[in-house]
Image (cartoon, rainbow, N blue to C red; front, side, top):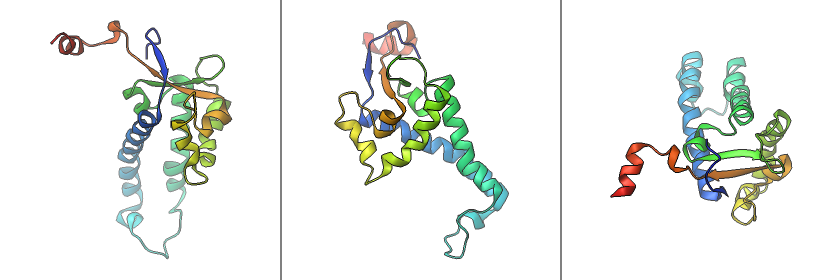
Length: 162
């Protein structure tokens, strides 16, 4: 992600799109693993089925997402969805990549953003810095980094010339 071009705060729809992309990618990773380990019974809707199928379910469904997301924020400043949509998570004060503590706090603050009625996520639409509750708690912002001419592919430049 190049930071040489103009930078803007990433808005509600861009961030929502990034989240949806990440959710689909994670499902493509997790669901086959869960199926291999637990079989089709894992996906049955039976009130008698326990909430957690076992240790592998905890690791794949809960621990793995935390590790992947936190590491990506710390090392790259973005998850795949944010990368695809040219967004980066940074420290609100320094503009640097978030620390491990900020990233872990941001991840768990998602819970607060969900309560009540997803207001913490919707807040992005009204906030002047486009911060959700979890951004405010962790001291982060999500920026939309507009690619510079040097970052564009030949196909993009040819399309613009038409």
